[in-house]
Length: 194
Image (cartoon, rainbow, N blue to C red; front, side, top):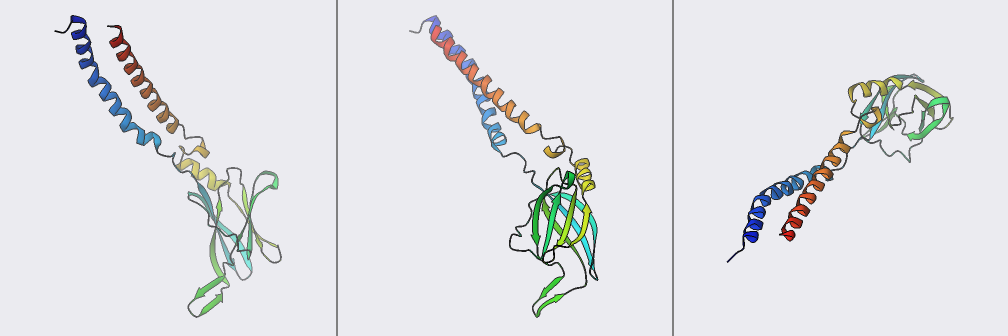
């Protein structure tokens, strides 16, 4: 025959068990969200230029999410990403944009619009384009407006001052785990006392 203390322990256990199971289920469902990597916020500058009859003019520029191409071997033209006080933040080579390839060979165009894709840097202010052989500066494009426009549209981006919400999600999951652990500890300690 069971004592009244033993019966009371079983009743407490039966009442507490569904709560603990629900809390464990909530944690289990929250873990995939918490374990997911933070939003990928890699960005690039896309700057367009127009080449016509030996003259290069800057066009539009914008910032988008993505990764720049790997142009390590191409040095037909050089592109510098320039920050404050003329500091070069990065120098990149690109393939000659005037060359049009086809099945029959290649043709050098005299009128072409092309884009340069560069890694994003919040301190960048302009893009300078150089001839890869003579190192003559061909054009310079102001890109500060592209960054401002991007941030106006993406205020939650970490480079635009946002990005706190993933930390709140991790904090909520940790708090929930601590509550469940505390409830489980209380349950087992209460069970041992009686």
